[in-house]
Length: 288
Image (tube, rainbow, N blue to C red; front, side, top):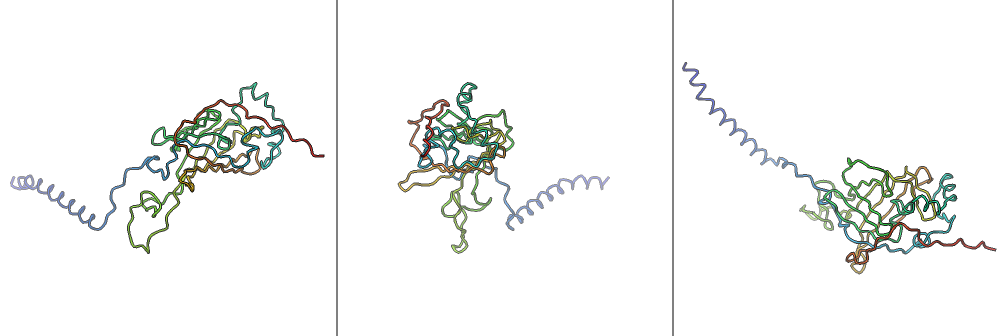
């Protein structure tokens, strides 16, 4: 009977001692520099190294004969066709496109940044951006969640994005970056990282055109856009978009272009228009 009473009386004491030992161990671990608890994951919007939102107007300073107008039939200069692509381009029939309601083929993801358009970039929520183009009234939703399922094929396809040029997790961004809280000796300071940019990979496309005059892009194509911000000499902001069109069906190698956009103060010049062919250039007369 006495032993049972002693055991019952000592049970609360055991609990108290166990709790004290746990607290002591936690305090010792903290003094030894144990890692802090994991931070809450950041959203794509919080991780953004640059602010791409706003209205951007295309600055066409090159290749105007392929961008401001519909090139002459058969003008495929600089397009890395394979045989199938060249044959299909030569068979282009603009009247058939209109009859089949395919006027938006030149306004798809493969060519839209190359056209004389305005782009409106906004966040629809913390994990999704939206690109709106006033020429052809096109919209491309850009997802940072790679698990997002693709729907039906569209002119703008299924776009998945990621921020690139960011410093490694837990490291500062140097003197020129955002969010750098690291301190230390000047001799140990790492060089500033590039500001960072956006990479967008677009698939699940409808067959479309690389240029207005029927240069084909197949459903198998992958469009990769790289977006970066560059300050202008007078304080203006410029958006540089490098586009890589990789189409194993009609191109013998990737087709790469770089397009420039200047930021506008507001949307006062925003003017969405339907998919319509630009004025067409007549074929040049043969040289004698």
